[in-house]
Length: 269
Ligand SMILES: [Zn+2]
Image (cartoon, rainbow, N blue to C red; front, side):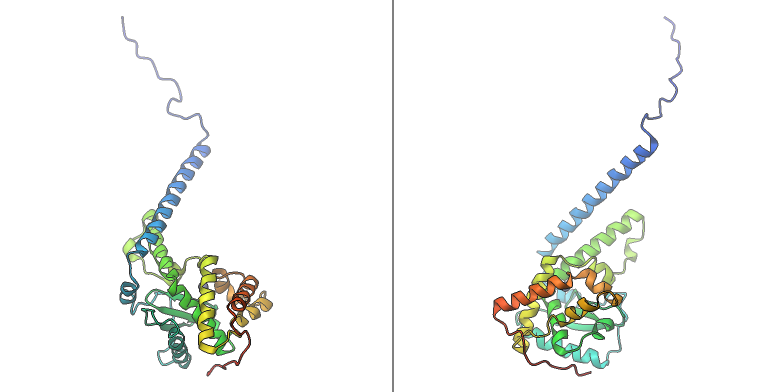
């Protein structure tokens, strides 16, 4: 029998599916893979937290500063006063292994962040709005609560692994990643982490002043001025809704039997 070579049918290499549908499936598949990798990385961070002791953290980050901070002069009067206040407040957490450091970021956007190594950053925008030492003490003590629960480290780990992963995916140079405060804080902490930090914050404030008056005053003021205070966007996007937060804080203080009214201390600047 003679072999007769047949022409293949037209379109043998062309799929019957619409190209857009195929592209969609490819993108969906790739995205799913990326999401899974990101979740695995986040899980590994949780795991790594068991192995990184607070001593290691405090040592590794003892003089670290995020790249995007614009710090005020080291002899700034407010900086000095806030450092003194943090030193006083941290005495109510006697087994803490941190030496807390304060930096003021010269930004109009109100924010306060807990960063690795015991670094607390508050912005000028926040300080402009604080009207008593008691208000400021609560904001700082709340940040101490994040250190106590190691929330800041969890956020840091996620910030690092996710920005490295993103760099790999986009083909950027991984070694070029400078860690910024924004990377570290990502989208803020969960509501549960925030509530725990509020509760510890109230505890510290009560130990310091013998009452918790004005702890929520800043949030009350923000609540009323909500619409006009656009400078608050950052703090509010990383923290719970102020109404809920005030209610929860007052309820907790009441349950603990802490005095909710007391002598207020003015700021010394
Ligand atoms: Zn917080």
